[in-house]
Length: 188
Image (cartoon, rainbow, N blue to C red; front, side):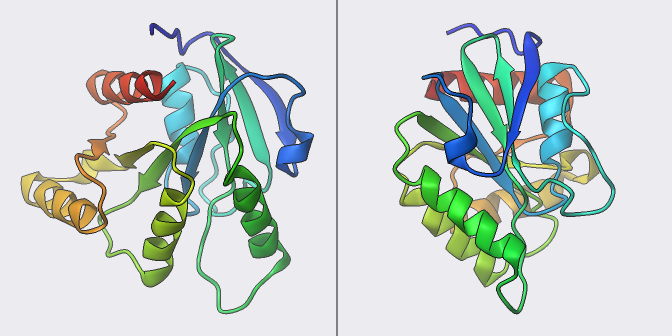
């Protein structure tokens, strides 16, 4: 399936899945820790400044729907993070994810990871949780432009330990974006 990612537009910000656009267009959900580069990847994939980028983590608080080539929604979710207690934001994020668990229009998940750092138990639990959705997961290692060969190899081993085989490395180059676009198209 050929998809023109540059035919993209922002549609709506929704506080929950029930507030999504009222149509039957399939969705691909983008998830990852706060400040992992979700907005940067969306902007790079579409070649437009559609998603708001911030240096401060946690700015995305809603599900942001971007219609791509009138074929599917790329849905930017709030970042997850670890806190010592349940805040209103963590409860809201949890309910957003639970709504997606059995959602028939969800075709796949793009999971962004910054593997320059070790992942904590909350990261591992979140990945296991996403696997229960029964949807394809496209693992994307962000900020790969900062990786040397040894770091890249270590990141591949970390991903394999998590059960995420052959992650895509995103340095926002044309080559890496082409691969990620192809992976998204294949799950649709």
